[in-house]
Image 1 (spheres, protein in one colour):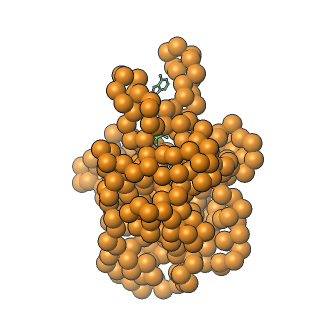
Image 2 (cartoon, rainbow, N blue to C red):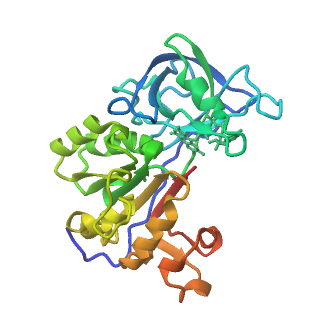
Image 3 (cartoon, protein in one colour):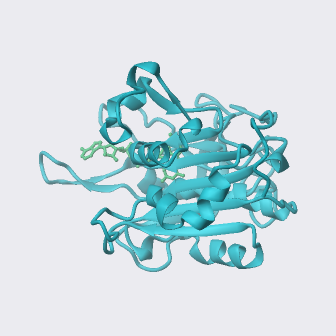
Length: 317
Ligand SMILES: Cc1cc2nc3c(=O)[nH]c(=O)nc-3n(C[C@H](O)[C@H](O)[C@H](O)COP(=O)(O)OP(=O)(O)OC[C@H]3O[C@@H](n4cnc5c(N)ncnc54)[C@H](O)[C@@H]3O)c2cc1C
């Protein structure tokens, strides 16, 4: 791997379709399949849902990394208004699920929580609506949305490091397939974090890819089954230390791009470790906190003072 680049190649963003179908003009498509996406029975229920977009403008026009909007038709929000659109990352490759441009996949986690005030069970509106859909049911969708969280047009000019927590891995299923299926020769790493081993999403798929492609490194961080030797939880950012030999040669290249997707809140710990390990050039750190040690950064700092730089793409929710 060459370390000679002084600056990164220009990132050329691809032309992508956006908002072909808007919330006031959604398109109705049939559900093909709805199956569990996790490894085995887990307290976290995540489902892989495929949709048939034949005959719509979405056929062949969704780039992996983009999202679609889903409408829980017939339901109302808690304020009584008609249910709004929720976004879900497309988890199929750009050429479509199994190479079929008319089939689009999404990866949906059922939101099941306990209301902090009443102790009542809270079921997320759209995620449960989607998870309950059966093959043959129809779904109103919008999109595609997102222009930046995609692989650049000049994909081969870069290496890629993808950090994911939970369903944040969904877009990478497509993005990594796009890269490796097109004979990509640079380095690709996926660091996937989840609470328990039962939550490893698309585990066999990524494992198999890593066996077939020497340049694809698949690392998993299980946060609630034991700790690291110093007592910290196994969060994704610690792979920069624990898998130093694999990751640091990639991350230290000027032509490496980092993508971060998943739970809101994963940025702080990741940014702190990156800064501490000498990778602050992926971040835009304001002058006013240059003297503050990264270990003292707080979530508030991420709003204005520490943001992703040009080579880092963030999609958290
Ligand atoms: C760009 C983008 C991509 C996304 N990709 C994915 C994806 O690939 N997969 C995926 O699963 N999700 C994804 N999401 C999240 C998704 O859009 C939804 O936000 C998520 O599914 C929850 O929607 P819901 O309708 O089920 O929950 P809602 O009903 O909208 O509830 C949302 C939250 O409100 C809180 N809440 C509200 N009322 C109560 C109450 N009474 N008691 C307790 N808690 C309450 C809960 O914390 C709950 O989590 C993405 C979001 C964005 C912005």
